[in-house]
Every structure is written in structure tokens, then in C-alpha cells.
Length: 105
Image 1: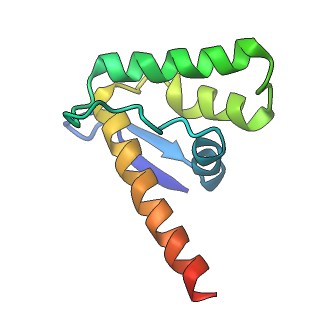
Image 2: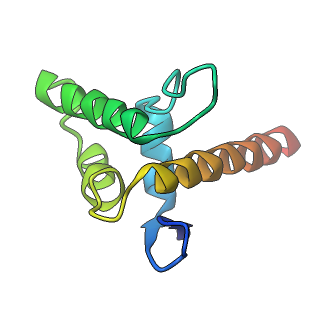
Image 3: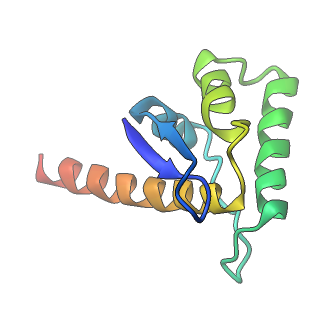
């Protein structure tokens, strides 16, 4: 279980599990999400939420793992742009560790 800081003061945290990270990877939710300027703001968070909503409404992804990701992380009341930025960093670090462990095997 990982914890990401959801605000600048550090008073709000969001718990992110290994399953949440796997769901981000499975549905490629962070792919092409951030613009070329690299800035994550509320507009990017809204874009992510709309992408997830579209997946759920299309019926293609009514999987429990995506719903859990939505309830626990993406639509968490503490999730703001700062938290999404930290989630992206966590995901990148997790992918790098995963790739390293797979290459060692």
C-alpha cells in the first residue's frame, strides 16, 4: 500500500494499492493525459475523470478494479491536481521498478 500526498500542506493523504496501479496500467488511464507542457492542473484531473466515466458508460470496462480505482483514488474527495501529480509520479516509479524486476528475471 502506498500513500500519496493530496495537498501541499501534507494534511490529506490518499491510499493507493498495487491493484490501483495495475488498473491504471491495464486501462492506460495516464497515457497521453498530460499535455506537452507537463503541467497537471484541475483541467487534467477533469479530463481523467471524464475518460474514466466514458469507459464505465460504454460498458466495455465495468470491471470491479476500475470501479475500486474510481471510488478509492480518482473520485476521492481529497483528490486535487496536486494529488494527481503525485499519483503520476508514483505510477512512473512503480512502472520503473516493475520493468527492472521483469528484466532481472
